[in-house]
Length: 84
Image: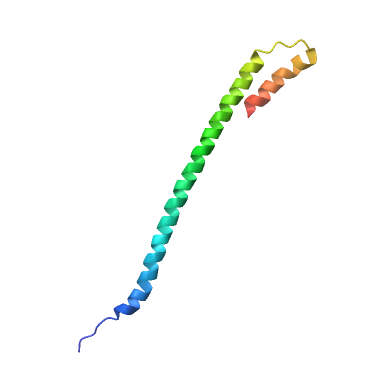
């Protein structure tokens, strides 16, 4: 007697499994690329902010202040800006 395996039962399991794996692969790749775009955007923003901060510190170095109270607070302001 010859026994034939029931391939239809296996297809019921394999086809949804392959579809699920395909969907998960697509979702993971699209998520990876969107995260890369966000990271690149935030790196550019951080670099822009660093340039702006550096320009502000340079402008603080060039300030001539006559008020003694403001002159005392100027180094603290520079340190505060450089910290961030």
